[in-house]
Image 1 (cartoon, one colour):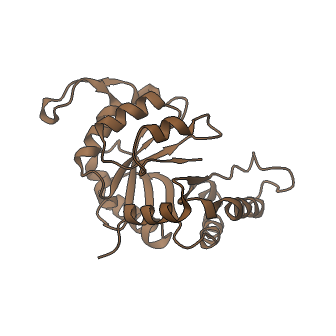
Image 2 (tube, rainbow, N blue to C red; image 1 turned 60 degrees about the horizontal axis):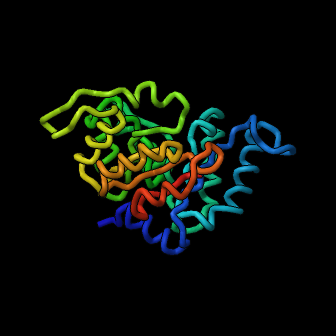
Length: 242
């Protein structure tokens, strides 16, 4: 049987002595002078980032949109970049996928088999049925969006939903209900949560709802999140993404 994602993550974390997940979001409008804003400039910049930081990271999280925007050439660029990673480095495809079952199954094929990602971010809005095809591979993993880092996240995620006695849930914010549902899908195995470092109070509350879930915690660094509250809120499987 193939080794599970969390097992591979633990091995890589032990080897590097870190729980860091390196975010790779090469915005062409924000590259340093001298790189330009075309695909070759993006690839050159991203390659330098990986050369400098990937040896010290447990995982790398490429935001697929920054490569998909260039079509097949952009995806080929991403594949070349991923080929540069040190052996054992895990790849979390920041794709935010989620669709009806047959479509989600094809998304799983594209991300896990073609791209070779170890994990993917997914959108819970269509419910468990739509995410299930991305959870069925014992050697792969899905991080469900729960409390995100964008400024408008609270518009929907902070809405209070009514109590649901069938799952012993009180009236609570939508992000808490997402966490509660995901925890019921099977903690630890092939599913975890995306919870932003920019919302430390929610991070702590969500950890209490899903103590056995692995967290992907974006927002440390450029978005203003701090590492201390992240590490205080959970076990080593909760790791920040720069």
